[in-house]
Amino acid sequence: MPKRIGVLTGGGDCPGLNAVVASLVKSGISEGYQFIGFKKGFEGLLDGGDYINLDLDAVRGITHLGGTILQTVNRGHFSSKIGHGIGKKIEKTIFEESVKTLRELEVDCLVAIGGDGTLSTAYQFEKYGIKIIGVPKTIDNDLEATDKTFGFSTGVDIIAESMGRIQTTAVSHGRVVLVETMGRNTGWLTLYGGIAGGADVILIPEIPFEYQKIIEFIRERRLSDRYYTVIAVAEGAIAKGEKQTVRSKAKDGENQLGGISYQIAHKLEKLAPEEFEIRVVVLGHLQRGGSPNAEDIILSQRFGFGALTAIKKHFFGYMVTLKGQNITFVPISEAVRRLKKVDPNSEVVKTAKGIGIFFGSTEL
Ligand code: F6P
Picture 1 (spheres, rainbow, N blue to C red):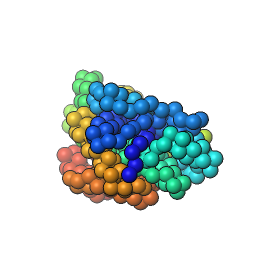
Picture 2: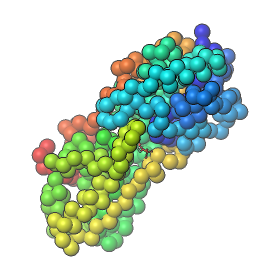
Picture 3: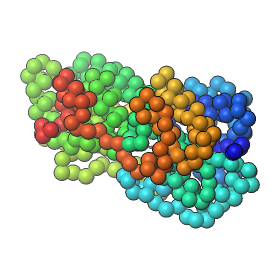
Picture 4: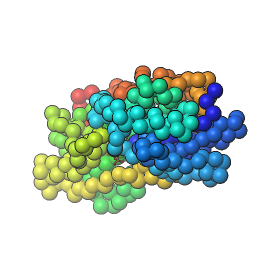
């Protein structure tokens, strides 16, 4: 029975990470387990280990804290994802060094809390004989293996609140405002945040948009005295026939997205010169910062407790997931590199259309 558990957080940070750690440690200590937390994701396994003891004092008061007390990276020696669905093999020597650290520190099992990249790395660790359990994390909510990831609900709250604020100034000035949101290659954050925030147009990667159609939509609104238009733009949104806008190409890890809304503003100004007054707001890391909301805290606590359950049941190589109302477990091998995309024909997209939201295309 494993007794000493290593914990790490990998990939981009996300509200709820500390709540997972606190839940796992609190519930585990009461059952006789010990915990250490590796810093900066898997990087903390190198050079003999960079870690802190996770006792009750270390996790007291962190449940509501944003970010991660363990710190995190989404680049470095353990980057195992270089693009949408594209994996990368990590060097053998890096694994050997990590395994040595784990043995020296007498760590029996590792809990890796992270997104697709972290889980891909976790899967490779398993092949080196390391007992590992995955906990899914991403504000993007784009992992197929789980119905929901923590951080998403908080991100949606922030987008909805921001869009509501932007709407009042857009109305006052009769402007077109593009609000760019995160989400990488999927449109979940933009769709949910856009609907809740009262967006007039929502542009997501799953539904390629046409500039001319957006112009026609804005013109129609003006004919019925609605001089403002708020457009929620996913950072991964794609114009029909064009390629995704990449902000910078990464040497290791995934390309950085962002900036598409400036491109759209520029194009709209070119196609309809001086017709609209356009502004751009990129919400960026605001969507990931700060405390988790109540829904995310509870999901995080359930995932943390679920990781302890997995340890007790010897579900090594498994990831904790939410299916329907229940916490359950799936093999990490089946969970990685499977993106959950928005279905353009789903009920939620139909609802949005039903209430008058335009998706930038008349095709669907
Ligand atoms: O995956 C979470 C996410 O916030 C994406 O929505 C976004 O594209 C990316 O991470 C940003 O990453 P970074 O922290 O490297 O800017």
